[in-house]
Amino acid sequence: MRPDGYWLGLVGGVIVLLLSLELVRRRQVRGRLALAWVVLGAAAVVLALFPDLLGDLSAAVNVQVPLNLVLFSGVLFLLVVSMQLASEVGRLESRTRRLAEEVALLRAHLPAAGGSPAVDPSAPAAADTAGAARPTTPRAS
Image 1 (cartoon, rainbow, N blue to C red):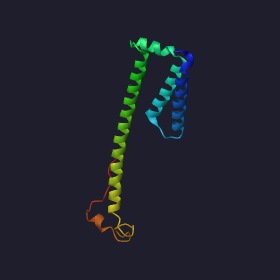
Image 2 (cartoon, rainbow, N blue to C red):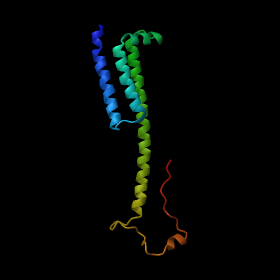
Image 3 (cartoon, one colour):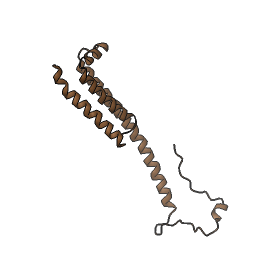
């Protein structure tokens, strides 16, 4: 392929790089995923600027067709992103369940009509001295 045919890779890499940096700046993407997208965009720019580098890399890892190395790397990248997202979903499900339990406990202590505590604050704390258990919030794990 002629060197002027690599402009599409350069434009695509710059778009990915700029878009990922903008999403990081807006705090819409954080952590390892942000780093992965920035690295992907930078790698696309470098490979577009130095097209012979892909051939050298594929020869170094003994891959016959350089495009196969690109496709394998893309699949590997998507697998890592998928695993990261699955991890985040599990963590957020656990957090949502814990917050729902806390809200249910708080609602159980409020009467349905007035929104004030079920216990009169001016009354003596007879329940506390009688050994009744106080509601506690679940521990953070």
